[in-house]
Each structure stands twice: as structure tokens, then as C-alpha cells.
Length: 571
Image (cartoon, rainbow, N blue to C red; front, side):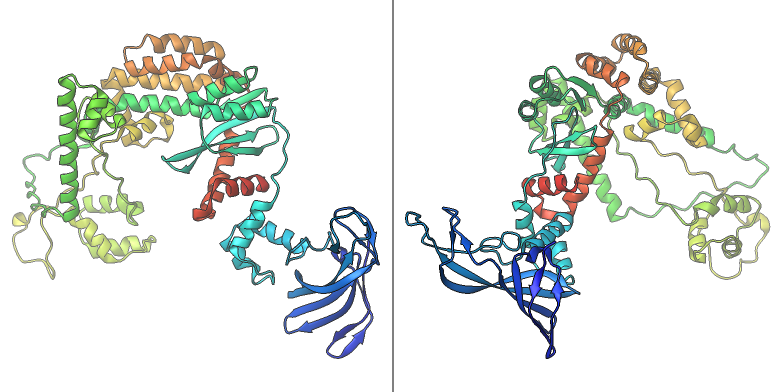
């Protein structure tokens, strides 16, 4: 390893002769080292006696003049370093060379017109790749390598693109610049488990162009988008296309959700059946009658706004049905009512007004103690403070007011402060027996997961809901059975069973199932390859998650060129 020779070092008035091993200073001689506050200044010059003309490549010894360049370098011991490089200008010795005067360069130390050394620029570039603009600028200050965020981004953009070999097994999927507005395409080498490129759109023509420019792909794993199927067919006709198994299962789940969306009345009927099954039997006549609960308070402003929005949706739903009965097409209805075509199609497929599913109740700190409170209440203990003390000894962290508010719904009338009034026991109204909350009417999406989950992981109420939904509605049972059988044959990689499944789906009485089977038929080769092949788009989905994290880290500066370089460099 070459060394930079130091003739004399002046530190605090002391003179020392030392030898510093700095590879990027090879070919230079350090004349003096000065420490001013937290900055180390090195004065150096080149050792070579001649300079090389950059145009005719001839050596020259004729010095024209000298000047000094100030160059920032990597820090030493946490302190900034400034190089004072004395540069000589030479006269070119070639009589026919158009370059009469040239300045000597130190390629390994600093570039032409640069203010930072090559190692410092490389370090800042790595900071820019890892953190981006603003976070990198915040980190550079404490590390004695200050740089503006625009400088870091400029260094990242100036870096060359990483080279890659054409993948043999290619994963293709889409990703969103901004969800629902603009999307791109990610390409992943599934064998090497690394991304190879990002495309600015998700069109089939863009994929076909890339495949023609990078020929050699033998297997292409993709989702079931028709654009990617056409692009792979045009760009690599000899490649085997594999439909991703995850997307196949998601498509089957969406099929089940569409069937449930057309049977919204069945969801309400199943909820009512579960409510009746959970209801307690009426008490005998010898027991005192329960006092009717107090009239609930008026609606809040939020509830009034919710009812107004529901009335507006209901008016649009009725307008869609009226126009459809008059013979208008879905496009015309969409333009007149002001709804999207998908919403119009969903309204027309539904057998009733699609109510929005109520929001799931927020988890309460009393939830682990609700069963104990119900048992004690049924035993006759109706003192909220005593019940609070009992559950507090079991670990309840809340205050007594929470228990008091929770038990207020079980009382026949609002409580009163102080001691209970003196009156006959028979005239005292009996407290209401706490009943389990009725199950919510599930949305089609929630019912879809209820039907696809394993029976053993369902709660008793969910099992009752599922049983009522399947026993009373054969259409939903048929769709659920087809979805379950398709998932089973995909997981078991049972290719012969796929033909039997196609026959059942194509002869179904439900139009949603027949339409789904027709779409699978058009992509049958890729579907069969998904069942038999070992390749899938799981690695691609993981790379998309990394890309999303990087994109959100960059805030509004995630332009494609910068995002593409940072993403591929990190891989």
C-alpha cells in the first residue's frame, strides 16, 4: 500500500515526523498538518515531476503556474478534514495540440471541479441510498460530513444503475405510486431473490417491451391480470406462465363475496336466527314483571348525520333500480345518478338495499371480566362498587365509574345516590337480567371470512351464524363449497380435480360462479401451472412491501428515477 509522506506536523507548536497510511492520498506529499478548533487542515502537493495532457496524453515538465484547491475529506477522530491541494498548471509540449495549458489531476483523490474527495462522496452517496435526503442530511452533521439534502439526492441520481443478469424465472406484479390513481410494475428474479427493475406503468405493452430487450425468461409468475398475460405472451412467447396461487385464492374469495353481496337479505335473516337462538326463555308468571327500560335519549349529531347519509344512499339505490326498470344501461345510469359503474353493478346484483355493516365494538378493559360480572349479577349482587372491588382484586386496572356505567344498562331504571328508599320489597322493580349482546349483521366481506375460516377457530356465536347461513340458503352453501374445494385442490396440488371443479362451476345456477369459471378457462394453462409448479409470487409480494416502506420513507420525493435507484441499490 502506498503512503502519503508527511514532512512536518505542527500541532500545538510541536514538530513531529510521522508517516500516515491514507490510500486515497497516494501520489501526494503532505507538507503540513494544522488543527484549528475541530477541523484538521492538511496541506499537500503531488509528488510526480510531470503532468499528463488530457487531450494528447503527452507528459510535460513546463510549469505555467500554481493554485490551491480546498477539498473536504473524510473525518478523522470525529473531526472534519480539509485538504489544501497545491495544483500545478503545465504547458503542453506537443506543438500541434490544441490544449496549450492544462492542470494536473489526482484521480483517486478528487474529481475535476469537485469540492469533496472521492471517499467522502462515496460515503455521502451511501448515506443518501440508505436514508434519503432529509434524514441523511440530519445524520451527516453529527458525523462531521455535512451535506444538504439536495446534494445527497444528486449523488444518488448520478450513481450508475446496478447491473443484473437476465432472470430465468421472473416474477411480475403491480405496485402503487398512489393507491387507486397511478401504478407501476415490479420485476423480480425469483431464483436470486432480488428485484431487477421497476416499470412506470402496469400495461402489457411495457412488459412486452422489457421482455424483448432482456430475452431469456423461461418462467413468468404473475397475477391474473389480463394485461400481464398479454404482455408475457407477446414479449416471451416461449415462456411458461404461472398464475400466482395467492391471487387465485383471493379471486375465489372475491367470488364468494360477490355471491354474498347479492344475498344481503340472507345475512340479515341469519343474524335474526342467531338472535332468537340466544334469547333467554320468558320468566314464569309467578315472578315479578320487569319494568320497561327508560326511553333512550335522542339522537346525537353524529347519529343524525349517519341517518341522513343512509337516506341519501337509499334514494340513489331506488333511483338506480327505477332507471334499470326503464331499460337504461349501466353506463347511462352511472352518468345520470352520479355513481361509479361498479357501484351501479353492485346495486343491481343485490337483492336488497346494501346496508353498511356496523363498526366493530371497541375492545373494553372490562371484556375479560364480563362473564364474571354476569354471573355475580345473576346471583343477586347488584352493587357496582362491590363488584368493582371484586374484579379489581382480580387485576382490573380501571376505576369504579367504568363498572357503574357498564352495569347501568342492566338496571330497570336509572339509579339514585345514597341509601335505597324504605319501601316494600314487592314494589321494588326487579333488575333486568343481562342478556348477551345480539350478533351484528355481517357485511359480505366479513361473512366471506366467516365461511372460509376453519370451523374450530370460530366462536359459538360465529358457528351458529355460519350454520344458519348455510342451512337456509342453498346458493350460499354452493358458493362456499366450491370455494372450499378449490382451495383444497390448490393446496393439495391435485391437477385432475381441477377438471371436475370446472364441470361443477360451469353448470352452476349462479351467474357469478359461471362467469368466474369462464375467466379461469381463458387462463387455464397458467392456472394448471400454478397447481403443479414450485414457483409463485410470494417473493414478489415481499419485495413490494420493501418498496412501499422505501416509498413512504421518501415522502413526496419518491419520483420513479430516484425510487428505482434506491430500491435496486438496496437489493
